[in-house]
Image (tube, rainbow, N blue to C red; front, side, top):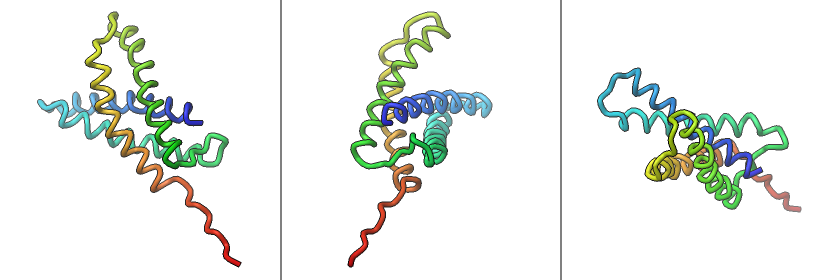
Length: 133
């Protein structure tokens, strides 16, 4: 399941970055990072939490925890690069610079840590209390 959740988180990252750019463009601000990054981080957190909530009653349910969280985290880093590089080539006509991939990862590390922590705290089921006889 970590593979699916990691890929979904990677796609959410990319969509949130594009949404953040759209908000920046509509706002007409001169400071792109001040608008785009907070919007993209908030979008990542909200969208991943919605994903976790939507899949909570299915086979895809994310159970949280350190190991699954780390797997999702690292798979999202890999997945975003795997999606972004060909997407950039298809839309721009040239292979993206390595610095764009590292900038994507620089965004993903804190954004995904926050998204995973929020999903773990807010949405992951609490362990069942043990009954004492």
